[in-house]
Image 1 (cartoon, rainbow, N blue to C red):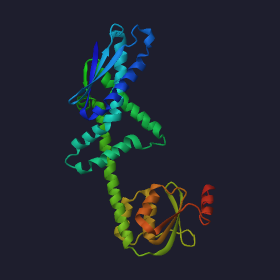
Image 2 (cartoon, rainbow, N blue to C red):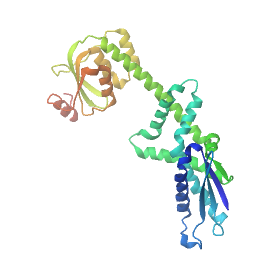
Image 3 (cartoon, rainbow, N blue to C red):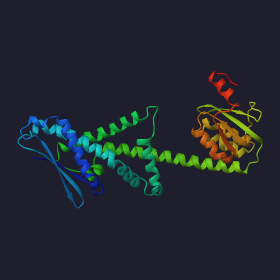
Image 4 (spheres, rainbow, N blue to C red):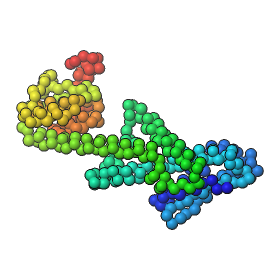
Length: 317
């Protein structure tokens, strides 16, 4: 008794054997009927057939042991989970690429691969609110469940399932979510690009400036908090930048958490010594980018150790 047939796209033909194994593992696990309980053992058989334009996998219920009313709901539910896992694991990247090409073919076609990279980071690479991979895994499972639910409904009413057609014309809620991810990724890409252009402009201004002080010690209290000291390790507050254009640009473009960069540009030191326990923070890397070979990073020295001890004790040195 034929239950359903799944056709893979030609580009996925090399994954056909793995796909069959996923189906077999999922379905047999959910049927949870030991072979010894049935006279001939098997209830389901998957057959892989290669075609010119892809691969076709037939799912057969083996009579007389297979009972449609009892076993088919379990088979459809388990198969839908396996097919959803295959789509998320092997086809999601291509679906995103297709959405990007169609949506931005007249505006960002040359940067499509960069937008794809941002999508990948959003779906697989970022840690949200300290939850790390637990959040990413939960989000992936949510997408998989959304896809599996629609596939299960489809299999209950149709015996032919073409994955190319399914991912192109159906799975509306899933494709809508991926479209929203693409739009968010584009926003992130544009903002990052503008920020990098701004950083490059600041670097250009810094290169034109004459040094006003020999050295500045920048002690990193943590997060985005810094304390600035002069060459004698005495606290001092820099005056606003004398160039009105630069001052207005800094005030408009810089994030409040990065205003230390504005202060450094106003001081224009010949050398910047950053004392930190977190050298890989983005704001420190940004300072190194803007001021280039003027920057040195200190992890521990006799001058900064008392400052960090005071910070840890809640005292301003």
